Image (tube, rainbow, N blue to C red; front, side, top):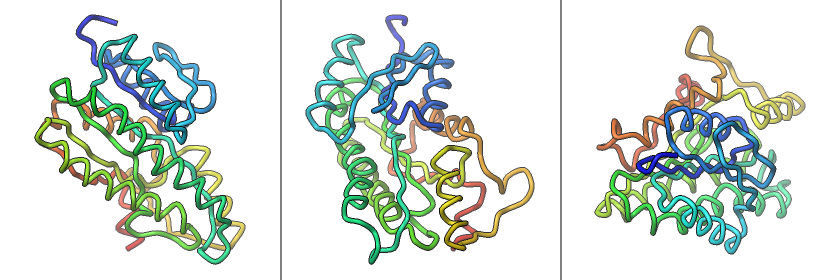
Length: 242
C-alpha cells in the first residue's frame, strides 16, 4: 500500500459480487479490506471476519481498519441474504434475519464508516440493492422489502451527507451468477414460478465482475456528480418485470 492509496471496505467479501468487487478494486490500486462472517482469502485483500449485524463488532472492526490504514475512502455494502416466502408463510426468524443482514448491516457499516468518510475528499458509499425493490416475483416478501429499505436509506444518506462531500448511491442489480441467485432460481422452479428470460448479449445472467465494474465507477472520480442514484445494472430485467 502506498501512502496515497485509497482504502475501501467491502462487505460480503466471501460472496460472488463482494469478492469480485474486492479483486477489481485491489487491481485498481485500492487498499481493500473484505468483511464477511466467513473466511475471506483473496489476493491483495485483507480479510476480516465480522458479523455485520453485531453493532459492537462492526464498530470495533472499523476502528481496527482506521488504526491500520489511517483512513476510509469507500464503503461497499455487498453483503446480502435471500429467503423465499409470502408474508403469510414467512417465518419471523427468516424475516428478521433478512432485515438484519440486508438493512441493519448496511446501516451499521455506514454508521461507523461515515465519520472517516466525511474526513476525506471524494469519498463514496455504494449499496447493493436489487430489481426486486421495484418490481418483483412471487414469494419474495422479506427480500423485496429489505432491498426497498436499502434504496430509501441510500437516498436519505445521500441527502444528509451531500454537504460533507460523501456520495451515496445504490446499484439495482438483476440476475448475477452467484450462489444466492442459483439457490433462488432453484426455489422458484420448485414452486413453479417462472420469469421470462432475455436473449442476446445483454439480457442474460451477469458475471459478478460486471457488477464490480459499476461499483468501481461509482467509487471513482468519474462519478463525482452522481449521488442519491439507483443505478440499474440488470440487463433490462426490471423492464421485463414491470
